Amino acid sequence: MKTLDLSPLYRSSIGFDRLASLLDASLRSDQSSSGYPPYDIEVLDENQYAITLAVAGFERDELDLQLEKGVLSIRGKKHSEDAEERNFLHKGIAHRTFERKFNLADHVEVTGADLNNGLLTIQLFKRIPEAMKPRKIEIGSNPNVIEHPRNSEQAA
Image (tube, rainbow, N blue to C red; front, top):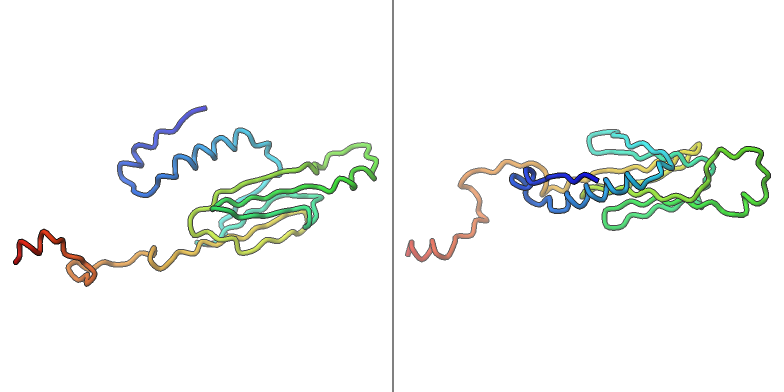
C-alpha cells in the first residue's frame, strides 16, 4: 500500500493533525470493502448533502444507523427466518449483513433518513458556527487585545 506525503500541507496549515489518519483509514477501508451495498454521495446545496444506499429487500427494522465521534455507521442484518421459509431456484438479490462507515467533517449533522423503494437516503447538513464564518478584522480596533506584560513594564 502506498503512503501519502502530507508534509507540504503541514507547512502551511494548522489544525489538520487528524487528516493523515483519516486518509490512511479511508484508503484501508476502500481496499477491504466488498462494495456492498452500492451507494451515492450527492451535494444538494452549498451545505446540504445526501448519502443514498441501495438496500433492496431490507426493512426499516433490519437497518441500524448510528453516529459516534463523527463517524456515521449504517448496518443491515436480515432476519434469518425469511430465508429458511423460501425455496429459490436462483438467488441474485444479496441480503447479506453489511456495514458501511462514513467519516463526517466537523459540524456536519445527520438531519434525517428515509427508506423508499429499496433506497435508504440519509440527509446531512453542514452547520457552520458564527465564530467560523468569514469576518473582517479591522486593524488597530480590537478591544480584546491583551498587552504583553513585558511591553507594559517598558512603557512605565
